[in-house]
Structures are given as C-alpha cells and as structure tokens.
Length: 443
Image (cartoon, rainbow, N blue to C red; front, side):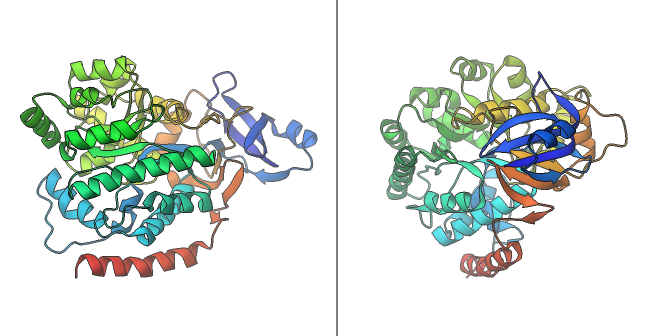
C-alpha cells in the first residue's frame, strides 16, 4: 500500500488530467484513488508515503518494439564486419550475434535490458527475440528475468528460414510452446505472441506452419518493409507487395503488430486499417540503419493504430519521442509535423495496443488502472499544466529524469536505486560473461 504525493500529477486521464499537489494511491497492483495530497494523506495515513518533492509524476512508459537479444552488443566490433547496407548490418552484426547466443546469454541480455528499462521508467515491453545459437527455452530465459525484475512483458521468438528449415521449425515450435505455457500459467505479467523476422527470410512452407499452429486469439509480431530489400524480394519472388503476402497467410488482424512499415503504399495502408492491425514506429533505428523514413504521420491521420518503440536502439522512450519529433519535421519539411501525432502514439496508442494483450488497463493514473507510476526530478521553470506537459517532456526531460519507478504496484527503483537486485554486482557479472561471448564471436 503506497501513496505517491506532493507532486505535479499528470494522469493522462482526460476527465482529470492534472492535479497540482497531487497524489496517487496504490493498493496491490491497482490504483485506487488520485487526488489532493493533503486529503489523501489523512484518508490513507497508514500507507507507505513517497514524497515526489513537488516534481512531475506520471504513468510509466510502454515500449511496443524491443530487441532484448541485442543488449550485449554495445561496443562490440565483429571481425571483418563492414556496414555497407541494411542486409550487411543484419547479417554481419545482428545475425552474427544471435547465432552465438545461448540461453545463459539471453537471460543476461534480458537482465541488462530490464535494468535500463526500469531506470528509464519503462514497465511494459513487447519484445521480439532471436537466438539461433539456442532456440528451445530461450523465451523462458527472458521470462525468468522479466519476473525477477518486475517488468510486464509480451514475448515472442523470431521465426526465420535464414539458418535452414530445421531451425525454422524449431523457432515456430518455441513460439507455440511458450504461447501454450503462458495460456496455462495465466500470469498477468507475461503474455505471448508468434514472432516472425520478416517475409524475405520466411518461406511459404514456414508461413503455413506458423499460421496452422498459432491459436486464433494470438497475433504475430513481424518486421514489415523495414528495408527496401524486403519489398524488392517480395515483388520479385512473389509478384506482390508485403502486406498482401501477409494477408494471404491470414497474418493481419487486431492482435498483430507490424514493425517499421517504411516501404508500404496506400493500398497496403488501407488493408492494415481494414484489418485493425497495429503498427509500431522505431525512428532511431530507422535512421541509424539508413533504412528511410516511414509514412507514420499518414498512418496516424488515417486512424491506423500506430505506436512507438525503440527496436533495441535505446530503452528510453523519451529519447524515441525526441527523435521521432525531429525525424518527421525534417523528412516532411513541415514544422508542425509530429507535434500531436507522436505524443498520441506514445501516451495513448501504446497503452491501447498493449491492452490488446494485457487485461489490466494501462497508461493512466486512474482508479482501477495498473499501478505503473514514475516519479521524476523535473521541476518546471515555466508555467506548466495538462496543455503543455508534452512540450516539457520533449524539451526538458530524458529517461534518466526518472528517479522512482513503480511497476504493477511494486517499487522497482527508488531514488535511482534498484530494489529487486544488487545492480552493481549484476552488471559486473554481465560484463564478465559478455567478454566470453565476444571472444566466441571473434575467435
């Protein structure tokens, strides 16, 4: 039982968006009340009290597209690797990494990622995993870390034919095994999707196998038209565009998440909208991989359910917000672009999308919602209310502005100190074992 009070409380609830000297009351994994701090403290005098010291308090963040498996690559130099284009980036760096991951390294990657998520105020993650060095049980390795760290997670494995049909079948089986396990366990903190890499590494046979085995109430998490090479492959080999090929295999739908969608046309957008399929934008990754700028503003204007992710490039959703804001202004040469669209994606759509899997309502500080709360150290030096909070976040905050993170009613970090683990000891262990991974890659 917790009170977070003495705050500039931004609830993201349109009926009660801002409370000066606000407080949020947590009982178990739920918010039971928001209101004035003085009144709340009298009413709930026996609750643990967290003093926000007059700073901004708001709902924690949701990352709709993460790559936990990439965590141990920071600073890695792969012998002989030169990034010439998107395909060489994939094969030379990321596929080289994932071919060397076993379940121990996958677990360490998850621990590292979740540490940084918590420190950046992220308490819900949709991850897209690959570890062709060890496929079976790899999602369990991530789940173990998620439960230990207290980060709500929807997991999947990246189906691909790129390392042969035996591993393609194993990747399908890992998804289905984990989906069935999650359905049986009914843990509100863990959900599952069926992951797919991208259509250019998936054969018709593998698509059919995945579709046949995946339960109808489970969607797919797949990269779509991230690079122009993906589109060219589909046109040349199959005589159709990517979204149409996915449609042929009944992949689209309200539970399916399409990553990137850079090279899609109006026809494909219409089909995505008709099927109520979700799209997630990853601006920093698109720029870093020189893949191009997706028509994200058009997707949002069309009413396509579009959210914001990081693609593993960062675990700071405010950083992703900042980059998206600049990218689309630059790309469209329009100063008004992304002002309204990106905050809608991050603060509204991400929660709506996540709630297509998680039952507990997310994204607001409101009675009955999940107790996911962050306390920042941000004190505005200009007038601030619900009408300009987004501008303050954009120009005044970063992920490390978060000092306390509460996820599902548990204090995961308080005053920048993680509560679930010994952070220094854990990071030292990860660093030591990562050296063994790097030596293995460059042997």
